[in-house]
Image (tube, rainbow, N blue to C red; front, side, top):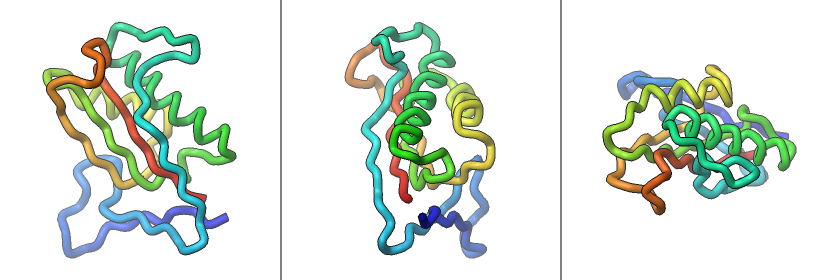
Amino acid sequence: MTMPIPSNPPTVSPPVGAYSHVVQVKAGSDLFYIAGQVGLTPEGVLPASLEEQAEQAFANIARILTAEGMTAANLVKLNLYIVMGHPAATVRAARIKALGADIKAASTLVYVPQLVEPKYLVEVEAVAAR
């Protein structure tokens, strides 16, 4: 099993958060593209708060990784979509809580006017490799 290799070239500014500018995936690795996860529980319940939705979205990512025989260390890329007006710090804290502080996947955070349903406040997409 080949793990993703994060790096931060000295020719660009250091990351401003818990991510890497570049993550290398060696040839022969299997790639897993994880669809956007919102804060729905396995029972289909959506918590009301951003914090709870973010925690659930990242928990869903972690459960998908586990189901495929991986951990958060296999993450290559995260795309975070947050509805405008909601604090990114809350989503970052949920990420650390669910995936750990040492995960350095490449990451993009985008504020959006609305997700597919107005009740969804955050959505997380992921790419993993093993």
